[in-house]
Image 1 (spheres, rainbow, N blue to C red):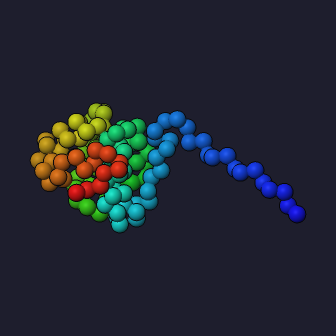
Image 2 (tube, rainbow, N blue to C red):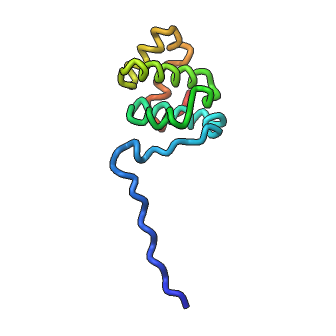
Image 3 (spheres, helix red, strand yellow):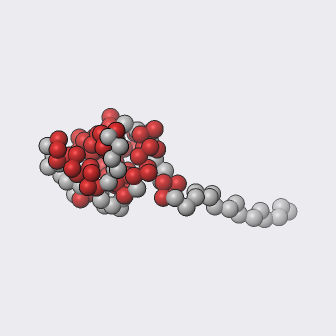
Length: 116
């Protein structure tokens, strides 16, 4: 008879928020508005995720135009060395004349809120 094995310890994900964030596969973003909104919201809330996001995804990975426009606004904001947050991304979208087209950032302000 085998002796019971001790349970494996939970993986240590660190204490930084970006350590807890697992990127979805690009195909997941194509099929889920909620996943795309959650990814964008996470970056708005924790700009340190941007580097990880751009290593794995680009604007073409987002099926919806509004998600692509937000991603592109984030990219231009980062390229200019500005912090990626709700205010800077909203300003970028307004500057480009696309803020109304994306429906604002209210649906992307929390990872738990999906598009309306």
